[in-house]
Length: 252
Image (cartoon, rainbow, N blue to C red; front, side, top):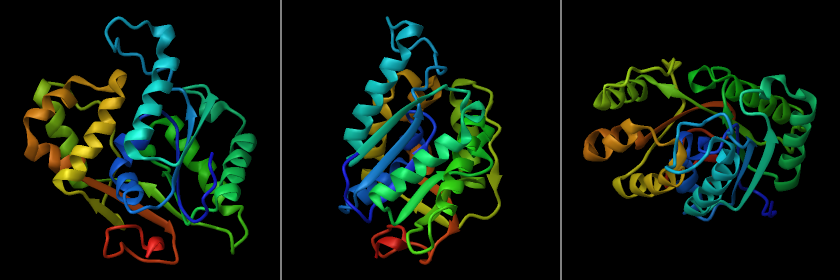
């Protein structure tokens, strides 16, 4: 991971979390010249859905690693750490080791802000919950002068309503037990151009594109409503809200 101090660090569980969960936040910062890094804990090998055509299940780790590389380029990430913890088994992995590895990366790149999953994991995913807890612990273990701001990815009511409506486009039952938050601290609202840039990064994760995401392309209003809204909860920060350029307050 290249070292450019003072940037943004995302700590995620699976390839595609960085884009589906926080792609707009990443783009907003990388386009403003903020060095942005990603830690991804797993290869996402449990996410087999028969895509892309002609692929085999045993090829999925390699496929998803390649997709992450393409998405990282689309998002203009400065550096990516792809670790090899078991998909679906992060909570059963060595908590102390993972926390220390996150701490080491924070110490190396000295980000102004870290973004991870909260205790709800967005929709209760155990890998998200575990990586969020390890990230919180790593940030909490930093000395006060070195400790970055900490934000959690969140789902608020409007975003939960988007997912329900979008999934109905293909008659898909909303199987995501979304943990909608009544109160969030920061909402990144993307313009139409930013949504299209985020969409290009999402398209890199071809193996994970559900049918409803494909159908959504024919509904630009709904797509803007959902993909253009990213809520976050501020866990700890010396700044408040967003800057005039729509960046996290740490990047004035």
